[in-house]
Image (cartoon, rainbow, N blue to C red; front, side):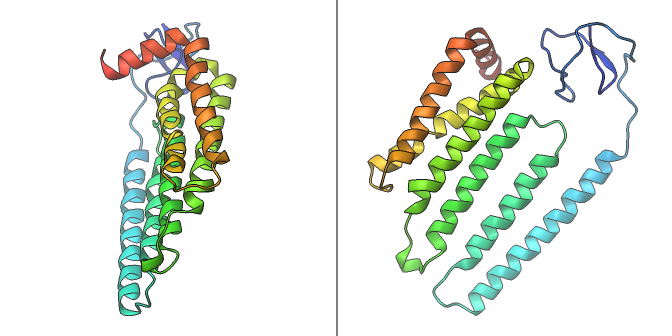
Length: 226
């Protein structure tokens, strides 16, 4: 049995990470407790934080919508405020939530930040002039490249936790082809950033199969119950 120094429990598993905290397990069986650690008050504290941030976020969103309606001047700026608050609230909670894989956190930030910048691009002008220009040309591919590269670095530097990043990396790599699709239908010009994002996504998927084929196949089979 392997031992988790963080949770102080012995774990009977073939993986290299603890199923509770996702930290690295010690291969040697060290002295620890077989039972789970005693219940702490952290869960109640976390619920209070979630409740407080939820109420605050809802209040800010409602206030911005009402002000925007009663001072309407052709700009739906409350949608931008709403998107920003939702990003900070949801991704913030995801970031500090214990037990969530780092790869999932990074993927959530990538998707959330992309959605936020798209909304800013569309609603930063008059409603009649809404468009998707700089977001499709620069912002979306840049975010894809940044987060895919970050997860690649983590996978290389922390090989014992590679499994924790695979599904998130595959999802981001697939999303990385979206900028190229937008460029092909005329939303992005120039298209060099979109092409770069697609190349990095393709190389990442190919590299995973070339250098970690067994892990990739087993993880995909486990995730999708194949």
